[in-house]
Each structure stands twice: as C-alpha cells, then as structure tokens.
Image (tube, rainbow, N blue to C red; front, side, top):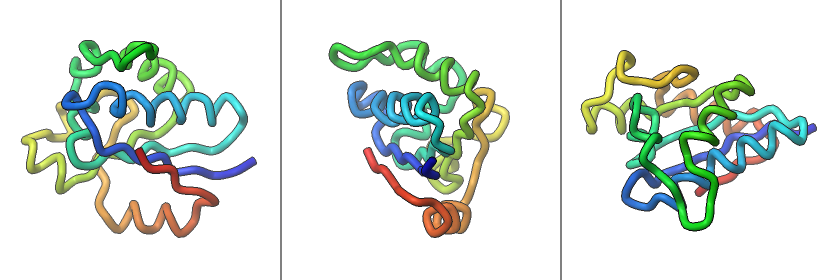
Length: 119
C-alpha cells in the first residue's frame, strides 16, 4: 500500500475544508495505507483540545467523530511549529496523537512518502 501525507490548512474559518483532511486520513488508513496528517496555517487550531468538538462541515461527519477515529487508528497528527507559535498553541494544548513538528520534518516526510494530498 501507499504512504501518504495529508495536509490541511483550514480551521474553524471553513468547517467543510477543515474536516476533509481527517476524512481522507481515516479513509486511507481503512484502505491499508500508511498516513500522516500535517496541519498548518489555521488548521493547527483543530489540534487544540476541545476545538474539534464544535466543527461540522456541510453534510459531513462531525470533526470530533473523525478525529476520534483518526486517533484510535494511531494516525500521527503533525502540527506546524511556526503556525502553532503564531496562534499561541503549545505542546500542552494539543490533543492526543498530535505533536509539534518543524518544516524540516514536513519536507523530509514529503520526500519519503508516495503521495502528498493537500486540502
């Protein structure tokens, strides 16, 4: 199966687009792929404890349910460090399975993965 990095950039400002990376990650994992979720820009706020509880895209599964599935599947959630600092999010603010990573980690992952999917 493939190795994927699925990136999201939208947060509570666009609930539908914010939900899609998690939906894609859950589906890819169910299909047997190795998946990492990368959150940058406004999407880093989704990794803050409690934020996903209030996000539901148009005609989509609530983000809190998708996030629970992603966490149970053991899919790593990488949070852009610079983006987190800009939004005053620290490691202690993050949900289970989320970790702060830097741009070198992201670039390294892209070069080692089969596909990069961006939302």
